[in-house]
Length: 396
Image (cartoon, rainbow, N blue to C red):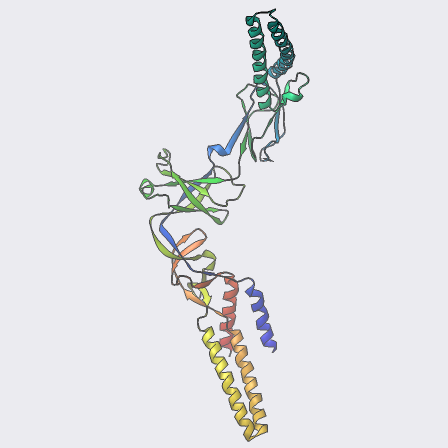
């Protein structure tokens, strides 16, 4: 009984670690290995520019810092802004005066005391002032100022982040003079990364919308979906460039870094695939662990033997009660011994497979059937069980 418990307890612990999946049939073409550079699309980067000439007073961010849309980035002092805000406040007063002048002209015109031309001039003057005010209000709003609450002229304005991202580079030193087009800070959006793969011109002829890729990043493989075959050959490498979108990539990749990438080219054919984690070397061969096929048959045979033992015991009871007890004890001991031996035997077996090629986190193989169940994770524990079982058999 002690031996039985010692064997069962490890199996219970292993069962929560062991994962089983079904063998899948997937399309696969010729796999080529190449280098790919981490990149992003142009619309994923933003460069914050000064917008007005002025003096850089302060940066609110540092390289590598994450910012959200609307966060402060830089403070600028601008004489040009001082003039704009002063002019805006003056236009507000002019607009009020022009409204009164128009109202007076309309009253006099109704009474016949002024001409239509005078009334038209008053209306045109009012609309001209209103147009100038609205133009300045729009410009001030684009600089982050709220014209509605502006009470006095100011020479300071703050530039804000237009979207979430990470600060890339501070392009202009602090306390320097800038103009309206000076680039100040780059922000990188981290919601998607792309990979530009470099392949030969002959391989590029087999690239299609069904082309798939797998890129290795920090010892982990990520799926990459085809975006486009770029139209020009790279002049430095004399190779074609294929753009892929990296699926479910980390959010902190280094732009410009080169990684290894596998690409599946047309034509494709259906191949059997399992998780790479399912492969292991066992007794000098590559194997995948599957559930034993004869387990159910053994279970049925044990049940039949048990029924046969019961019939024998009942028959012996009619002849001799003591003899029946002796046989029953002997059969019970034998049954427990057989049961222990059965428990020692692991419920899995190793199937030798032939490796065709590795594809990301999967591997194309020969030796298993489609939809067959296999151990995809926890292979180490299964191997341990099989090794213990084989040692137990040699010990008997």
